[in-house]
Image (cartoon, rainbow, N blue to C red):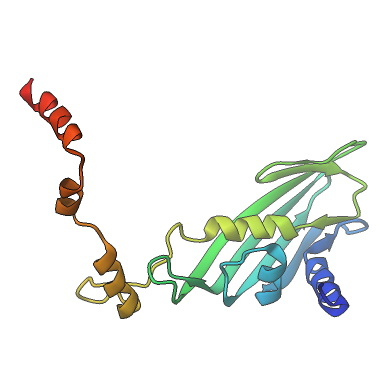
Length: 190
């Protein structure tokens, strides 16, 4: 069971991503938010071991529209996909969101970069949008960088164990069932 203090802290962290739009005049507004360890714990990005992303949000309120520009910059520590040791991954990317304000809307519509909401909405909750933006910016494969000679800089013990357990092509050919070998020859005979 989670202690009450951490639940309060998680609510406070999520509240940082709620931007009040009700009563704001037409114009530009800036916000700075830190996506730190508590953000990654709340969001469920369990692969993130540590790190900090600085998020700068530029919000421009127009008559029936809100334009949001996001700039993420920082570094995350993720496990290497090859050896599972921590790897520092620098991130510096931008994203944007257009929020259209309409009169009398029953249910808000949220697509990738366009939200359509009721013009009487009090605040925008950007927590999930920020989470998705970070998730999409992470590299598909996280590996330690190679050295100057092109060799991996991963944990040498893990690399030697992987090499030991890897099957070579000749091992695959030796392990095949002889009944399948006859079928291989049919293709070559034609």
